[in-house]
Image (cartoon, rainbow, N blue to C red):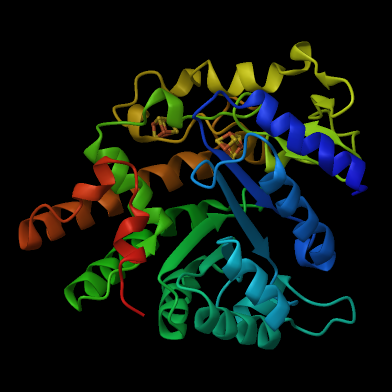
Length: 346
Ligand code: SF4
Ligand code: SF4
């Protein structure tokens, strides 16, 4: 990304964010740490802006874990940048889909990065992607992360995968097993943030997603490519030919290209209208729908089953732990479930 484009993105972010509202800047790839010097420069430019406020602008970098150094650690620590590693689980699971171009698995170096990061930072997130092939290993993946010392675990399904009926039917048992691990960690006084559970506990407590929590693609969320093209969501980024681009940093956003947001955020899928879980379900995530059904506003059988299983698993966790510990999830009401895990002493 030429620095002129980066400058325009910084301006775009400040110009389009209402006063007092936070700006979340996430560096993603490809692999953002391949361009560590540019990443530093962009952070400096955000901080040098006349409207910069350290409580307002938050940075996060998600890396594939193959690049790390003391210089990177120092910069991330100094600038309080959230640090996440994409890791799909124990070595054999991770290497199924994350190999170097010579075919060698990246797991040893990724695990080493996680260990170093845990020593360098007060918190480290992992982002694990699972598919039909690796679904049954998901509880083992959570245990693997826990054994490394990770307390913030994000689990994301691969929506583009071919989810067979057989795999879909396994979802309730697998998610329930993750809920059981969550309960065990709490009972051992070692709570973990597990996105699959915590995000739904929050929604259960609040009796549904708040309108502002729903999809913000193209209105509160933007992704920028090195060429300066703007996409409505990081997951929809392409080479400019996939139909999702909504503008560029030179000409701004063309509203008529925001069809995807209207379809995703403003209309409920017909099949969901009468569902009792509709307020607790992410049926409005346009990109998840798009990748799994081909339409921004059509839920696929996988997404529906996954949401049902996640809500059920989270409800079981909530019921069990509230009975045992009471008021445990108070912070979730404020929408900050991370607090639980961030407060875990290292
Ligand atoms: S499409 Fe999904 S991932 Fe993208 S901004 Fe909307 S809710 Fe978030
Ligand atoms: S659980 Fe299924 S039917 Fe119900 S709202 Fe979600 S996607 Fe729609």
